Length: 212
Picture 1: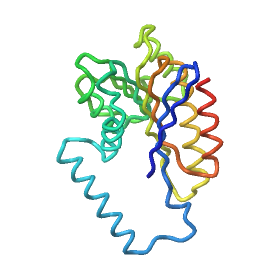
Picture 2 (picture 1 turned 30 degrees about the vertical axis):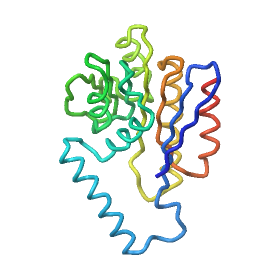
Picture 3 (picture 1 turned 60 degrees about the vertical axis):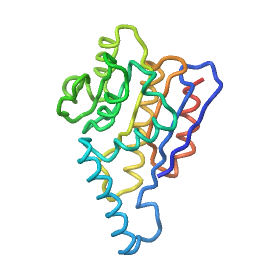
């Protein structure tokens, strides 16, 4: 995984775009050796066990923790939207580092176990970011406010067809970017995961154009 920061000077709604670019295993022309797969599994187990030990619901919590350590944005934020939030690891991190009484909203198709201080929505209550109901829920809850941070770590259910998986993930990125343009304050932080597919450069170009 590679994380890079793109900081623009535009006068648009988004000034800071942080992208986590993920290399999918299906991209590689040959499958990794058994030793490499075993080493990867050991690393995954390490972070999985560490997440469990610290009470986080997923290893992904450490991605946001590392980003916050580098950019120090959660402590200065009071309103945050987490798109495609299940199982809730990023919401847990946001709740830990943001000031008390902050507004944190987590949205996903899946139902999530409650987290103190976090408002959650599933597919049936407005958590589907592809739906108009999601926008209505956000408008209602934010009451005219704009979010300081919009997060997106979503991906489709990954299968064996890399092109289909990458296309689905790109759709989620574009929709999250649209929601960020609508609900993120000027100068706010937008963080998204992007599969490093053949559409990566085009997707990055479109995402940055949304900021202007």
